[in-house]
Image: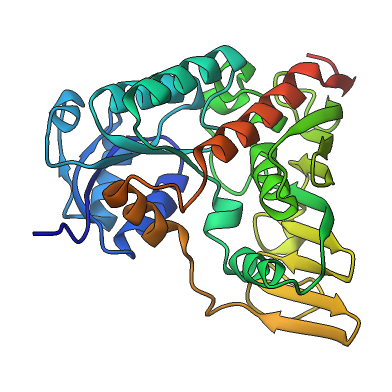
Amino acid sequence: MTKLSIKIAAIGLNHNHIYGQTQALLDAGAELVAVHAEEDDLAAAYMQVYPQARRVVDKRVILDDPNVDLVVSATIPDVRAQTAIDIMRAGKDVMVDKPGVITLDELGEVRKVQAETKRIFSVCYSERFETRSTAAASRLVAAGAIGRVVQTVGLGPHALNNNPRPDWFYQRRRYGGVLCDIAAHQCDQFLHFTGSTEAEVVASHIANYANPDKPELEDFGEVLLRGNRGTGYIRVDWYTPKGLGTWGDGRLTILGTDGYIELRKYIDIGGRTGADHLFLVDHKGIQHIDCSTEPLPYGPSLIADVLGRTETAMQQAHCFLATELALKAEAMATRLGNRA
């Protein structure tokens, strides 16, 4: 009998992105069976949302369970690579929060284990996979709505004090730096929309301009990318003012030879309500498109990949290259502003 869906479990709940990761699969028909977290408060909160998840004290219970197909994980970034390695070596596919790894050495080890085990290592780039405007842009670009894409401009502003931050959040060895942490989203989108399969970091900067009391926090970063199918500019920061009313005004501009698309993913400061606003400018005129009902393909596609051993949700090479670009940008960045 053909298996119709998959069973999943969660290991590590240290970032709230775990809820989006879990929900993407549940909405696509997966069954959540277990959760492991060392922190009682995080486990209690997760199980309140997902009471079907049985808490296990030892993560080996999940790793040794032959019925679990895929594990979602949002552990602290500096243990994320080893967690993913343990999951793949246990014969299971894994979806981790971004950043999937925080050093190039870790990336090399994850690549090695993925090649050896043939398991899926997927980084949940939520700014693409969980936003309906980005899904709509993908559909329009694929249909040729703006011609050939030649450049992306990705802006990832975040709010620093919109929720309590644990100590590890301010320790660079644990979170990896602002480009490693946030700009991985924009590296993913640059590769996706330009279609680049090869790329390099041309220049990058990091800084701490506004938080001298947190010297290891990088509150600003920017990157210039060059790929074999286009170029990209990225800016990320922790400066979102309280007056915005949401955690960040994430934007993406996709420039094509016959027009451009701008996404206002989380808010339209021009006054339109809701999120997922798409603006399309082409030879016919200007359109505002409400993307609130656009389907999100990541969850269904990843389940299909687990069952069919395919790469439709995201090519494995793409996943690794997006991570590599963010890590190289962080490693080579010139430090500006207050120095750690």
